[in-house]
Amino acid sequence: MKRITNILLAAIFSLTLFAIAGCKTASPQKSAGIELFNGKNFDGWTFCMRSNSPPEKTWSVSDGVIHCTGQPYGYARTLQSYHDYKLTCTWRFLRVAPHADNSGIFIHDQLPDVVWPECIECQGWYWHQGDIMLHAGVGADGYPIAAKKATNVPQIGPPNENPVGEWNTNLVVCRGASLELYVNGKEMNHITGCNLTSGYIGIQSEGGDIEVRKLALEPLE
Image (tube, rainbow, N blue to C red; front, side, top):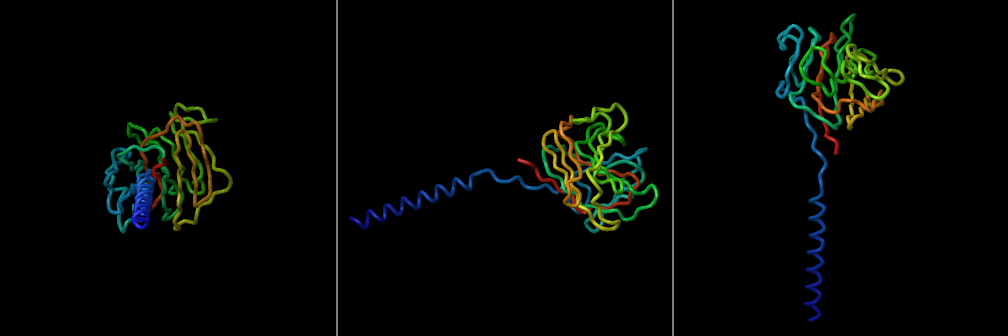
């Protein structure tokens, strides 16, 4: 009888552990990352180019890398709108010459598609990668909405970019009405109280001959 009782107690204990383990497994899991660039083509993307220039004259993909010549002005953007995320962009300038040292990452890009859209731009100007541009129609705490020209939010401290030809990693954290910008692991800027909290994500063509090898998004809980 004692042996049977011990067996029953052991079985009950095993079932209890199984139930606890099952509850842990059923708990919410961390959101999976999203590769915005698949390394092969521009599936999931669309373009807006000055004078309706054919995108293939400016944008191409080879060896798992996006290449943008910077001419003419315009941008490539996602077909899907996003909110509350961490965006990682790994990019580099191929060369810097007069009037060929600029690009940018568009955050919360709005329709309609025009060469200078309503959006938040993480500045792509050489040695100013920590600046944030609030394009017409966009405002934030301390920066009223401008009707026409973009408002510049200057970077915090000196630049943290790598030399031309070397890869840089920009991290953009969008949470509600706030945005944080990091360049190569250093916080370079942040804004709060922004009137845009969602939109498309884009890469700008603005004179700079650039490459992008990673563009990935991690949704925030």
